[in-house]
Each structure stands twice: as C-alpha cells, then as structure tokens.
Length: 254
Image (cartoon, rainbow, N blue to C red; front, side, top):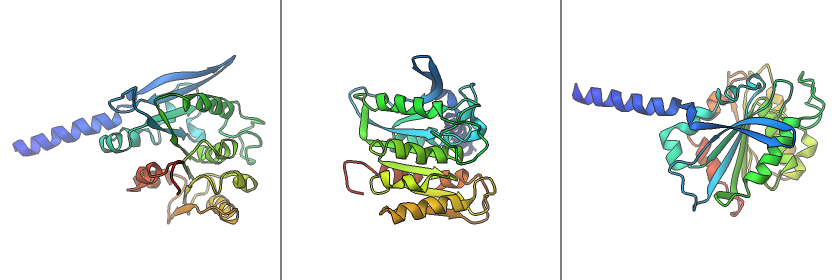
C-alpha cells in the first residue's frame, strides 16, 4: 500500500508539473506602435553563462486572440514534461496572433483569414531577429514548429528567414511551393499530416514535400492513417519528435 501511495503521489506531482502552464511567462512584443502577445518558457535551472536552443511555436487559427493564453492549448504541455525539460532544455516561445491576423505574410493561400498582409508575422520576425542575438542563445540550434495555420506560418518564416533555423516541423500545414528553393537545402524539415484531414488537405503537405524534393531537399514525411485535422496529437506523441529536432544544428552537416 505504501508503494502504491508513493507511486500515486509521484504521478500526481509529475502530472501537475506538466500541466502548470503558468511556467510560461506572459510577455509582449512591442515595436513602435505595434504589440503582440507571447508566452515564454525559460530553460530549466537557467544559467546566464550558458547558451540554450530556442524553439518557436506557431499556433493554429482557433487559438488567435488577445488573452495570451489560448496559444498554449496545443503543444505547450509537451515542453513542460519533466523528461523533455531535462533532455531538451531550451527557450520555448509561443506568440499569439490577433483574431484579425494570421501567420503569413501576403495572400493567405485563399483561406478565409481576410488579411492582405500579416502584421503578426512581421512582429515575430522582428522579435526573433533580436532574441537570437542574446548571449544565452545558441544560434546554431533555433527551431520552428507550427500546426494548421501555424504549419503554414512555418513555411512562411522559413522562406523569410532561411538562415535562422536549424530544423522545422510543420504540422497539417500548407505553403508556397515556389518559395522552397530558399530553404530546401538549408533546413531539415519533418512534415506531418493526417490522411483524412478535411480542413487542410493532406495534398497540401504532399505538394510542399514534392517541391522541396524537386529543389534538392530531403524532407522527412509522416502521414497518419485515419487521422483528421488534429494530427498534432500524433506528432507530439512521436517518441523522437523533440529528439529529432534537437539533433539538428547549423554547425554540423545534416
């Protein structure tokens, strides 16, 4: 009975730790008159004399807003797991796009976002340009992930900042196949999609994968049988999701 009680206590403590989204500090990106909310997770046992990887995470359309909380609905708990905090210790950044914006730049691939040009993506890029200059950041290990609208944003930011990232993981996204030449040979990419996705067709990811291959790249591609739009749950459950990402560095040949 004592062993069982001990197990339950340990399980509850670990579970509560993984659920504690308050560990992501609330911040704002401010450039002149423009503001964008974001949440940031500080590296475990932070030491200012060390350099840490940076993981940028772009949320989906349903998490847009101004509460600076909704963007943590998908993905944030993954980075809070004890084993991930210890093995893949890094800065983790979750910006939040406003309701009337999206993670694009121009022409949101004919999705009904009603945005001609993205102010949110411009602010994220300005923020990242400055953040990675910090002395406590390992510029060789900067990563980007995104789901749905954020998967689209992942392809967009790769195009706009191909030299910034060491790896990218777009999930159920879409992109401009004509832009891949800017990053196809520079950035390792792992693409995820559900084969039964009726929100963003899996053909969109196939289109991007084919374009990357045609441009000389070598993407990793995972499709999930009988899975719809929420393929991020499957992606986050991949045993080597974070391991693969953190194995990539701009300093070493991929």
